Length: 230
Ligand code: DC
Image (cartoon, rainbow, N blue to C red; front, side):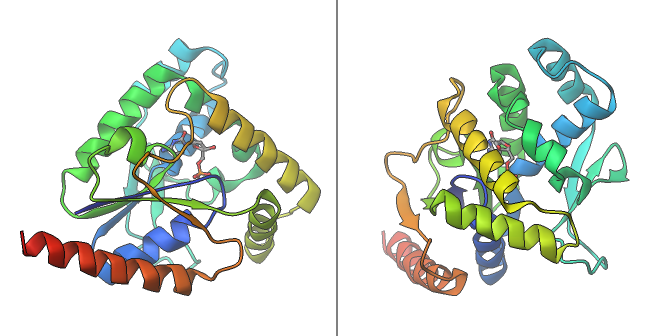
C-alpha cells in the first residue's frame, strides 16, 4: 500500500506521516529532506542557486541518504546524510528554509528527485510525505491525504519546534518566510503544491495529531478490508 501525504510547510505532515508509518509498520519517507539537502550542497559549494543546470549537476553528483535514527536520541525522525556527513539538523536551519523553494522550481531537478523517490517507493509499503506525492510521484497511491492548517497556526507550530530545539526563532520572520514559501511552492510551474483531485483534504488547525491519526487508521483498515474482499 502506498500512502501519499502532501500539504504546505509545517502543516503537520511529517508528525502524522511518521506516526502512521509506525502504527502500520510501513517505511516512512519525507521527500522535503531531499530538496533541503540539495539546497545545502548548493550553498556549501558556492554554486549559483539561480542556475538550474548548475543545480542539476549538484543533484547528479551528491549522495543523499536517509536512514533510521538508530541510537541518536535528539528528537530526530531519521538521519539525513549528505556525502556521508550527518546534516539532519543543518537542513532545518533558516537559511535553508529561505532558499529551498528555489531549486524546487526546477523541472530537471524535480525529475531526478522524483525518480529516486519512486525507487524508494518500490521497496514496499510506504508513507511518503511532500508536496507532489499524490499528484506526481505516486498518482496511483492507495490513499492521498492533503493536510492543511492556517498559515498563522503553521508558523506558530514551526516557531515552537525551533525554540524547543534551542534554535533562535523570530515568530514574525518565521511567518513571513512561510507565506513566501507557500507562494513559491504553489505558484511554480513544475508540480505546484495542490491537492490531487482524489485527495482527502484535512484541515488540522483545530485538531490534534492523535485525532487525525485515529480517523486515518480507521479509514485505512476499511480500505484494506475492502481490498481483501475484492
Ligand atoms: O516539507 P519541507 O518543508 O521540508 O520541504 C522543503 C521544501 O522542499 C518545500 O518548500 C518545497 C520542496 N518540496 C517539494 O517541492 N516537493 C516535495 N515533494 C517536497 C518538498
